[in-house]
Length: 55
Image (cartoon, helix red, strand yellow):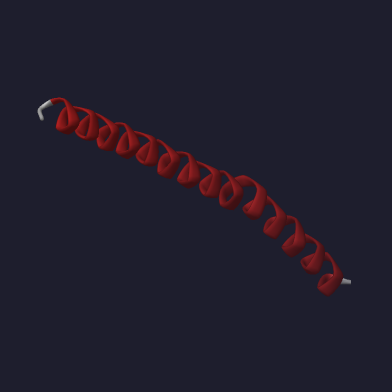
C-alpha cells in the first residue's frame, strides 16, 4: 500500500515539476532568444542601411 501511495505521489510531483518549472522555463528561454534575434536583425539592418547610404 505504501509503495502505491509513494508512486502516485511521485507521479504527481513529477507532473507538477514539469508543468510548473520546466515548460515555463523553456518558453521563457525561447522568448528571450527570439528577442535577442530580433534586436540582432535590427542592428544588422541599420548597419546595412547606413553602409549603403555612405557610398
